[in-house]
Image (cartoon, rainbow, N blue to C red):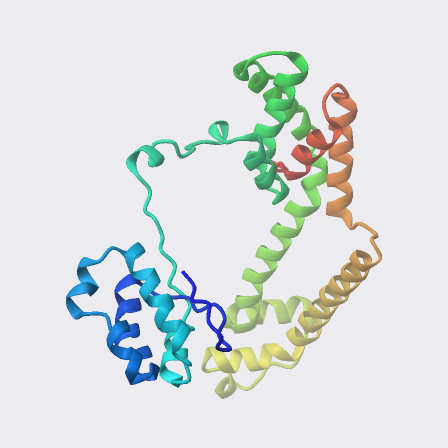
Length: 280
């Protein structure tokens, strides 16, 4: 509801029917001239028994004669009405989609726009159904064939990633004994460093061993860290220049390969499906 009056507050939203009448009786009536207050006063018994629709004329009369100069009244009546949220019914709950296959085309396209592979998969299945005029099961089998082709030949492209994982994990684990384990540090020094061995009293704890080994461990570790930092900076500049790094190049190659293999389907749907799919 809103009250239209000559005051600066043209439209005054109310919070609830009960509070509307109470505010009229306790706040607005204070601004009504005494000569008119009796005719506009709302009896207390009327508050809970009168239908809301019947209270509107009374509220409008009070607003018309009251200057609404009382700050509390203006502050109360200017408070936005709280939102009322309806709870779903059992019938509505039973209609909720429980799988990608139950979702509408519009909802699937929204999920696909966010890069969710399952949504791309269902979108492409429906594209196959439309183009080949087949049912869902047949289209799903066709997509399994496309997915198998999409993953073929990826071993050679994923080799750099697996190599990087192996080197990183192995190097990280080996760096611990090479810095803090006395026997390992001694062996490495004898075979690769040949530095002067510290005094026995300076090698009594693993921290003292690390302090001695750090003399030759710091340069290679620091250089490797800086080299990786430089590579990361270079990659960021490639991205800024739209020079696709290795991962993006392989992704685009695989997507185009699948599009060329199945030209009868939408190139956009096939390409996005290939881009969002796993490499393994």
